Image (cartoon, rainbow over all chains, first blue to last red; front, side, top):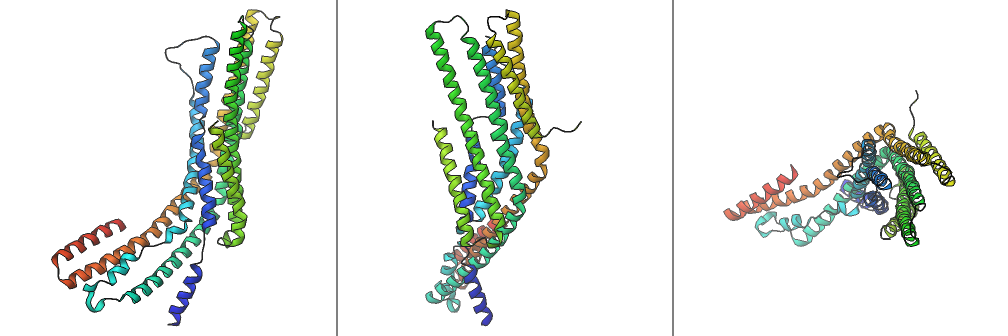
Length: 279
Length: 132
């Protein structure tokens, strides 16, 4: 009897485990990471644009434009590998930290033991409800305890590689991809600057100037998208570091307070990214 | 020769950009002083330097692969373990459903109703299949 009471008391205590803040942070991180798929620019796209720009600049028309873009395809493959690894991790962490995961449905079992055909084995409604409540509490208690232990271990093992992968993806987006756009801007600038030296009417010059600024605006928005995405990766990295440093008090109020600003910051950056996308 | 890091490659690419800008500005500032041949040569050099810089940026990204191989392997392993834990937690629900199906099956036997027994067996088999 004492053992049952002890187990029940323990499960009630463990049953209080709330991983909502871990779930919220991880869910925001997953959504922010997935914004990668909404950036309409890749290394390969840059290579193709470069080929086309070169053909336009020299008034060359081809039936099919041929570009040598192998290195650019390889760069995209590496970026995709990093992205998919991070998405896979945050997807798993989001699902594992969801409180509803351990909301088990025991109604069928409760109904089955109340079945009249069970004869002497039949359990009355009050007893069935009592057993169901106890079963539910114990199941949640053990499952939540298992979940907490596992999440702690996963965060502990994943922090170092997650930090490396986040920093590399941030580097690719904020440096390599953004710098490629600087090259694109220079090519555009040179093309239009040379074009305006040619004999054109004032109207044609105005048209060319307007085209230049429209193209420049498009590149600037893309640059901002890459930079916003990179900032969200930095926030995710800082939040995950906090999660790692506080992994031994994972369901504490203190960790909830620590993680909330990171989750909010990530959500703000998602919204900023979406605004840029819709411009 | 020592291997170029992705950061060094990125820095190098930016130097190529600055160099290309200088060539472009020189051509523009001396527009009327240059012959057609000189114009074409400078324009071609300007875009060639831009090409080199861009190719270095793509290379810089490819070089990252050398730094991330162990991290990718670790995350892949942990993601697999998370999936396995999710499976364990979901199996608990399946276990509960099977218990309910067994009780219903027992009740069907006690009731000696062939139809109820048949339905209970079907239900039990279906639920068992979701577990294994």
